[in-house]
Image 1 (cartoon, rainbow, N blue to C red):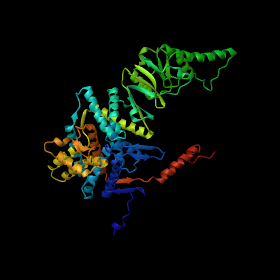
Image 2: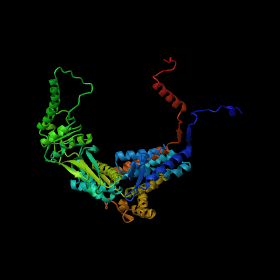
Image 3: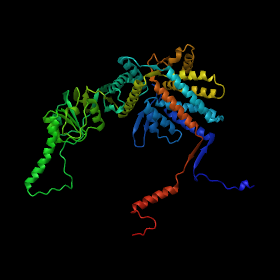
Image 4: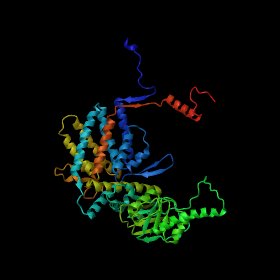
Length: 557
């Protein structure tokens, strides 16, 4: 009786939403599976694209897992983890963003029946982590190094990696054309890590095949004044002066006041202004530079002055373009025109202004340091060019990674099937429940070849059975076999040059396992209500602030 009279203990604020235990964990798993199902159909060369329309009316057509995840605006707290791993895969490796989300969703799908049967999540987590480590060791063992090859061989190997990445994108039809372009661009920037040294400029119109690579810098013609058309538009081996100053007549400040006793003195003040600008222009000409670029405006007077002396000038050049010109030509951006020495001037073999579509481009070719490249993209619709840019970004990242970590593995689901077979075999030697959990991890890895078949319209069960049989051969000759997208059968992925850097797979399995373990380890979700009183106080505080800061107890004036 006494126990019934005990008062109820209120621990959390009224209105707090709390859910815990098995149903809550299953609900989190369902949310993650729903997110994985959204990007599922975008995997592989025959993957479909998603059209995402946001509240501002912008339309994005994309096949890239990370882009789709970013634009989805997921609100479920557990499903947000999948968005984060897609973003981290994109920034770390560049490709494999759909793969990582799919794997995480599949690991959770396989774990769900065990959770419903009452298995403790920690047992699953332990087995998943073991399986993940074994899978990564197996990838390292199967990876083939492309180190020590000649530059031409390396170039063709890197182009194969880029082509594999591009095959699943919107520009997959021209993958060989763009793969070569990407490899040339990455080799051009050499060991420089900065991605912004590869510029991508988009010009609507023309076909994809009209895209071209500039071994140097290209940027759109800037705003120009009268006299611009008289300037020469082509130079051979010119000196280039880069500035960060305005070359135009400055108006005085509004509150400047000059008192004159003689009207003739006014003319001397006007002359002084003109002398300052002419002095600056004269110093630019004396430096021997034939091209003058500035981040700030170059006025009409300066434009005409340079035109009369056969010098090309461009003002209001974008900052990143100016830095790329500096890196490519070996010049240094100056903040003053006094004492301009030869060392700070850049140079290139050919400079020309060229018409691309309905835009005019300034193109610097044959730069001495050669640590920059520009890809000029052409295409029909704006959305198409945007997606082509995202695809090239993925390919550039992949080629950079392949150059640094020069090991590749067979794509097309081959590596996934081989790891799956290896884990199935290993699990047989384990006594206890973890045998089942490692088997479920191995089964989850088969989602990649299965989805490749589904997206291409083939019979996934049939193809997977063939793959399992091939990979199970004791001689190990089937280890490189994956899905053949063209015939609907299976083929040697390595011989067909479907390659991807080992780092992509290792990162994807690692991130997906971590995400799955993180979601499995959550057993309670607490959602705090927004405190009405706190909102009221905030509103009250704002009101007081506007009212001249009158605090409590102060007399009204």
